[in-house]
View 1 (spheres, helix red, strand yellow):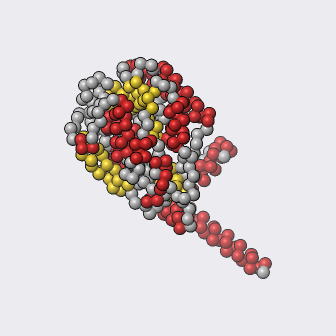
View 2: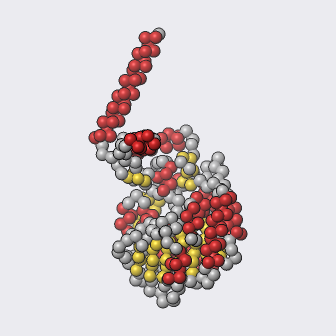
Length: 379
């Protein structure tokens, strides 16, 4: 019996050694990947050795991440893992629920009370520092709230509506809260959220635009004023990348192109050249096709239009605004989009320098409560 146990252990040791040698050999043969298209993220490359990093534990940590990220045919094994878990009945992975009709939902957890208060105080302070401009706030519910009937049976996310109402009731009265919850809920049977991505679709953004038009007292364009063009039908978004769930149908992306075109100048603060379009069509060939809208996120984007009404709008935003802004081009002379996650300047200086008279804060619920950068709205 002892001889059998020893033989068994030797066989296991040889198999493990052979496995490690094969992994090492494959990693030498197959070049390192810098980016995973399926996961839409940068991969850990082989760390450079140093005694200091080793003693601090950073080299070991980075090397473990390197082995995991550069694992041979990693994408294949991710798909195998998610498919196996689906067969076993698992309905969530990496903070993402797998719902009905192929919808993926980002989980929502209620914010810490201290963080909530800090954000509201920052926004209210911004309002008091800018008493002469018209201020609006749009907090967009995510699909997990509006399409809750598509969630798996066991899912019990925190109530986004409760915290949307709490934000509205906590804001200074000088800030006009633009409530898009009910309009989106009324349209829940339409394609207003992507299935595999955390953003709303262009149609969802259009319905919110109509609500803002009422709040700002301008006449919105009808859908008949646009040529609605499907520019992609193979979009797999952020939730697809994050969850590892595979075997799902892709999303489509539609652009609302105005029938009456106008000349634009689109300036990006982190680029040397301007554009004459708010769309970056080449990005439809990339993994993150949502960046077709304004080339993704930038510290500041300035859009100059042909509208001669002198109105200037500042949008303090997350990426939900990128597919929303195209609807505003016929209503403002200049639009400034600021993403506080990347902007390091004084926002009041931007307002005063450019004589901005309107400000819209536009965030989706998840980003607003998860990201602390809204506190940078004041110095």
